[in-house]
Image 1: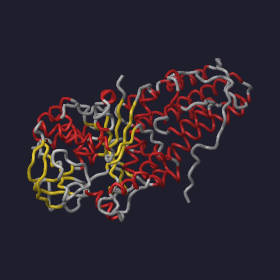
Image 2 (image 1 turned 45 degrees about the vertical axis):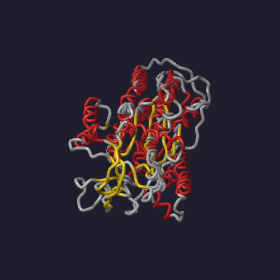
Image 3 (image 1 turned 180 degrees about the vertical axis):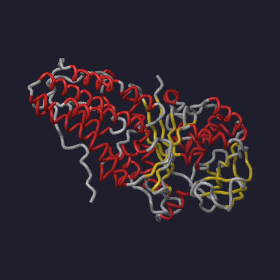
Image 4 (image 1 turned 90 degrees about the vertical axis):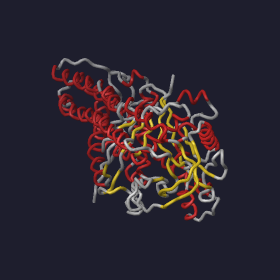
Length: 519
């Protein structure tokens, strides 16, 4: 059976990771955990992009000598690994473009393309943006400014090697039109089709060593190194056995989904499928480009001093709160505005008042009425309570199917909205069933039924939030008396009812999400 194969882009290591990197990683991790919760096998690969002129410049700026770029990137990698640990990112493989198997894979692909005459020697005349590592034609450039980052461009004229993108333009247009799920969301697909209305320029895929030496050597001319974007894209196949493990490669390729930021869509939706076509490999099934997080309407940048460091929020409010905010606040694909006030508002409303309050109230009542033990399943005679029980049970049991529909299109925000609808219904159920009044009347069967209903709802809520907030999910699950983590649940537990074992001890821990009081 083919495993689901999920990738993030490779992150450039000229500086420490920021909220944009965290956002992509959290999305990939959530997809992987959800697939596994549904009983599928999934593989999530991530890694770092470590070649190119920006790295050379950053290494020199950091005090490293020319030729010591590897030492520089080695010093940066731990910052990425530590952040992924702090964010509870469950990746399966971490690839670096300085790995020998990757370098050999890049050279293998280049040699194959060269032998097929898809690579030729020529002279590059045009513009180059060092911060973006991007080439631009005169047609694309206005006032010597990079169309993407708006910084000054460098005029270049030099001998180089080119990849015949233009040869495959019509094929790519047809492929995109025939495969509606290839580029998502749809408005990104339309952007690429619009771009492809103009003739594609062949891609310069090399740099002379005497100009830039930090890269993978071109196999058919050792005086050149590989253009960093060509190098980086090959990771999606080099990391899964393209060169040395055919069985593994065939079990994973084509990738099910590349999750990327919208700023690198052109590289993934144009360069990458054409590279694959040139070497007779299938394109990935889906490329999903998400939006940016802005601050007060402005894109984050070091020059503006408005970069959001995820570690600050993780340390102050916890990993799951940070994950929840990014996934809930904005529809995946669109831009979002990040602000601490909005973060705290969402934390207090959704996490403290809704979820945290439900867990606390439910376990407090089990403590009070049943000495902390899960009661027996009980039939009730009260028609009002019967109707309340039936309604919430049916709604809870339909939850997972609703989440599946939303997750199929990576609508994390709507999936969480479905879960929170059930959380709010459960809180409302407490008010409507009035267990405190029934306790005064001595209606023990009614109290048992109410507690069972709440505990079963809470169990399924705990399972449902697992892909999004794994640590909180496991905390709730263990408070319900389970000794295993949520990722080990049986499929019958995910969508079943009355799965809790009577007599099991629950325990009320400290509040999951203590309300934040702003001074």
